[in-house]
Image (tube, rainbow, N blue to C red):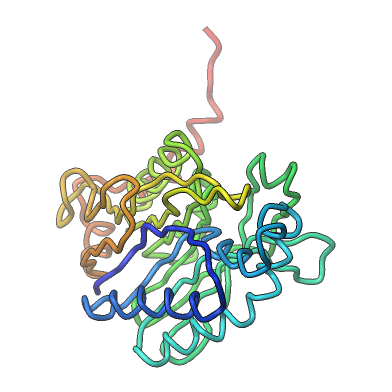
Length: 291
């Protein structure tokens, strides 16, 4: 399959049609390049807060609520584009109130036949905890699609190996890692996490970051990253583990071709068998000796 992962700029939107035009342009560009799976980043939907005006966009709480109010319409747009073009789209995550007192950070997934479900972020960053007060949501989900078994680890979640391992034990072959990071340090942490998950689980990880400045929105005012697709550095994959990678802070799609057979073959008969040998750690970590 061909995967398209975005380095996505957060833009000021003068009206709803500007958002429709932007998302349509991005999706049609990926489709023209034969992509079947399109990945947008964490909190890319925060640009919708601009539709509430400058005062709303500049307020942390006001921005959350302005975006949440428009998630339903954004979902209808992504659903229509996925159906129309016969592709799978992970929409940029957004704050969603789902019966609780505070919003969760939710990425919604769409396929050619309709919505596939959603993934909520599991572990919140310091900023999300305080002052933003965005909370952890529902459990990890595995999406069984014609493109393979897909899991999602949103940004910080990708830095925690047990979350990735849980998805892989459930059957995940591809892990999507949408992110939103202010500085090179944050981007590097997610990038290293994505590469580590690909190594230890012999799977493909897909990193999609926000990029560029949005000084009118304090929640996402500065964004650093490079879109990339990673695999295990083993037989049938690049020796660096980098299937495709864009330039730092350059908006656009990055494309990579991925074979499910390649993932299954390296898990079965790779130069190393990290996935199979994972459980050999357990008796070892119980025998630490103080010298």
